[in-house]
Structures are given as structure tokens and as C-alpha cells.
Picture 1 (tube, helix red, strand yellow):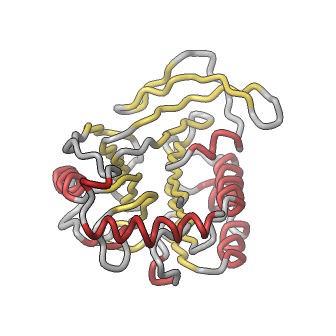
Picture 2 (picture 1 turned 90 degrees about the horizontal axis):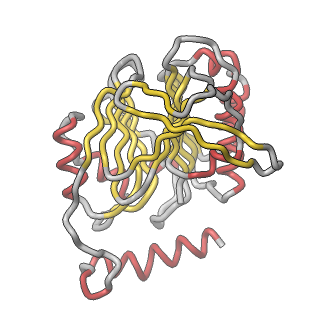
Length: 270
């Protein structure tokens, strides 16, 4: 399973916690065998590479830039398609949007995520909902214009939005981020930011430390951020009731995927 994330500054304040969150998240993802390609963009300065050392060097040399950054987008791939090459590293630029995805889209020719984004005619709320309903599968999708709108959307998979230090948002497609950073307690139960309501949780870290954080968990929706990184629209998306995992209901192409790519993926992971 890939790991995808997005850090968005909402206060315009320099915060080294961004650097800490980013480094820890990347190392954690690498430890979970996400080693089939790396993408990072810091305020539009982007790198797509197959070399993890180059990827980490790009991050570690930019601590100051990261602390001040408005937008940080990233993806670490664990391949669910047969080809592993730089061509299929996520973070493709479609119509000015950096696009990446964690999950699986069925009925693809060469690469499921690339073909999904390629089929979006223009990056608007209406068109994204159409494409989500058109293609079967699951996952969390990111379409990021560093100087404009950002879209985070999902189908049959939750994603989390964390408010950290009141300064920036950390959006991740997996739960791994919960165990790797500490946040400041606000002493109140909920915080409102744009269309989102963040709930305070008490969790215990791997070191046994009790931590309070503010988090919003979302699924089957499109979340839109404006050019100032404020969440301004949240639209629920309803999908046809079709249980793809039932063998008798899967298409021939899905059967091919199930037999080839799925088994290949788990051999790769384990």
C-alpha cells in the first residue's frame, strides 16, 4: 500500500514541527516497504525519483524551507502494478496539478493511478465527482496546485486531517502518522477551521506518552482547499452499491488483476 500525504500551512508562521512530521512520516513509510518510487514537492519545487538517498537528501537539506513552506506534497510508492520505474512515480503534473493516489483503480491498461488522473477533463468539483463515480476501486486521491486550489478525495477509504500546533494541517492516506508526532493541547474539545471540525483525542504513543491531538476523519467525499489552504468545501459522494470483492460480480479484467497484481503485491510486501 502506498503512503500519500499533504502538509498545508494555515497561519503563515514558521514551524519546525512540519520538518519533524515530514521526516518521521517518510522514514516510517520506508520501513513499511514503500520503496518503489518517491515524490516530494515543497512549494512547487518537485522531485520524482527511484533513489531513496536522493529523496532523503532533498528533504534533509531543506529544513528551513520546510519550516516556512506553504504546501508540501508527497508520496512513497509500493507498487500494485507490474512495472516499477521512474515513469510511474506519482506526482504527475496534469493541468497544473500535482497528482498522486494511494489505493487501487480497476480496469487499467498500464498504470491505474496515472490513467485515473489522465481521465479528469478539468480540475473542478463536478468533474472530480464524475470521475470518482466512473472508475471502480478504492483509495485517497490528491490533486494539488501549490499556488491555487487543492483537492483531496476518497472512495471506500478513510483519510485523516490533523491540525498541528494550530499552524498547519497534515493530511495522510494512512494511519501511520498517529504514532510519530506530538501536538500541543488546546484544552478544548473541538476546533473549527473552514468547513472542518477537529475533535480532540487522547492517544498513547509507542513510548507510552499520552498525547492530545485534533483530528478529522473523512471518507467517500471531496475536500476542497482554497489558495490560502483553508478547507472551503466538503461534498459527500455516494457510489453505486456494487460489492467488487464478490467473485461472481467482478469483470474479466478485475479477475486478471486479482490473480496477477494482487498476488504480486503481497509477495512484494511480505
